[in-house]
Structures are given as structure tokens and as C-alpha cells.
Length: 64
Image (cartoon, rainbow, N blue to C red; front, side, top):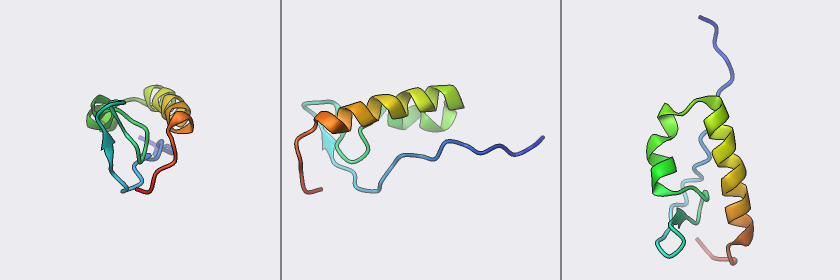
């Protein structure tokens, strides 16, 4: 079995869960996405990364 480059976990260790938006304001993932991250395949991880980037772009600036 060869080792392939895996999608890096997007956690920034700046966890602040925004319950109104149902996502972490640090990384932009939902609790469900965070919980299942290690079990996702690369395609699923890349889709979540696209979504989280869009989510973070619409969040107001905050000091986390």
C-alpha cells in the first residue's frame, strides 16, 4: 500500500462554535462535518473545504 497525500484537517485550533449559524467560526465546519472528518474520503473532504471557505467569507469579522 502506498502512502498518498491526505487532505489536511482544516482545524485552526481556534474553536468558537456559532450556534446561530451552526458552524465553527474558526474553521467553518458544522459539528457533523467535524465529527465525521476522519472517516471521509478525499473527495468528501474537498467538498467540505469548498463549503467552509464560502461560509467563512460571509461571516462578520470577529476576534476568536
